[in-house]
Amino acid sequence: MRKIPNNGNLRMTKVAYPLGLFVCLFIYVAYIKWHWASATQAFLGIPEAATGARRGQQARSLPGAATHGPEVSYGIMFDAGSTGTRVHVFQFSRQPGETPTLTHETFKALKPGLSAYADDVEKSAPGIQELLDVAKQDIPFDFWKATPLVLKATAGLRLLPGEKAQKLLRKVKEVFEASPFLVGDDCVSIMNGTDEGVSAWITVNFLTGSLKTPGRGSVGMLDLGGGSTQITFLPRLEGTLQTSPPSFLTSLQVFNRTYRLYSYSYLGLGLMSARLAVLGGEEGKPAEDGQELVSPCLSTGFRGEWTHAEVTYRIAGQEAAGSLYQLCARRVSEILRNKVHRTEEVKDVEFYAFSYYYDLATNVGLIDAEKGGSLVVEDFEIAAKYVCRTAETRPPPSPFLCLDLTYVSLLLQELGFPGDKVLKLTRKIDNVETSWALGATFHYIDSLSRHKSPTS
Image 1 (cartoon, rainbow, N blue to C red):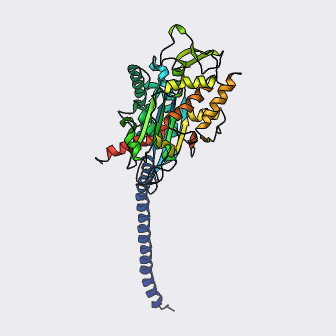
Image 2 (tube, rainbow, N blue to C red; image 1 turned 135 degrees about the vertical axis):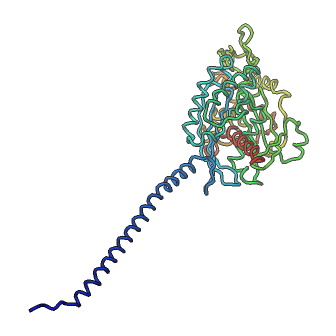
């Protein structure tokens, strides 16, 4: 018997085949589109990611780039003093429109001072380079080109003959120009005494918060170096401004504010130069025929040698009847006579004192050697009388202790400080050195930004 075809199944096969083919084609097309989109996205994402990475690198490497956080910057200040050269590497943080904040300081010192190389300037270069290497290690590479590098010399070079000082400065500038830092035409100079005092005033008032808080009372500054001594404060009395010699008044512009300061530097009245004057010697000149310098400020019977500014002097105590303190005070008064301007307002101003003021006070136990402290001016006189009286019967720890304390006591009195005036003695405020270096760095960077602003 012949089978009859199943037309229903045939019709289903004819319909299912093209439908299946269509579904497969649809899936295939969808897969191709998905794969192409994924590949394209992956391909385009590679350069985008690389660009993002480069942008991230650039943002980290460009000093001062605009960010949501504070702007970070650095400054390098070389302090070329009479007894040594020091480098200060400062890191600053600053929010737009605000006063900078000091976030870190690196400090290193080398002896002797630059003036020791006056007759052989080439020997000064290795020490300068050693201190530059400290800065290179401390400052990130990306910030080098934008970090100002400055050296300011103080009394040690001010006391040198002009040509010798200039040769030293030229050698330093030569070393600086070979460095990767920002070096300007004025990167190496000798500070005048007023600039030194003003810069130290900026430092101490920045660290105590006076410059950050308008209206807050400022503090005065006393600095006793080796070759010079400075006094700086902001007068509040019109009488001080009217009675002070014009050379004692100076204007200062910093952080968009202007100050009229009383500031003066007494060259030759720093502690080491004062010693030499009290002993009867002349700055930079050996004693004639190697003669001894005899002084009533040294213990009777004392004999020794003392080197100052690369000159060695033979020194001896003076055979004389009477109190060692009284004899020494009389000699010191002769040296100070008519050399110091007295102003009455200092008795009403809070003063910080540092450098040799600090060192002498610690040597005789008036303040803690690490923390510093406060004392009254009369404490120096009491200590001087005690040390001088003791030196009459036994040698003191230092042959100059009687002389130095007597000198500081009388210097403060000549400046106008009463015996009961409190002085704060410190080396650091908030772990930052209270030297002029920070203030000078602020002033320099501030002046750079003012010079740039008209053309920006």
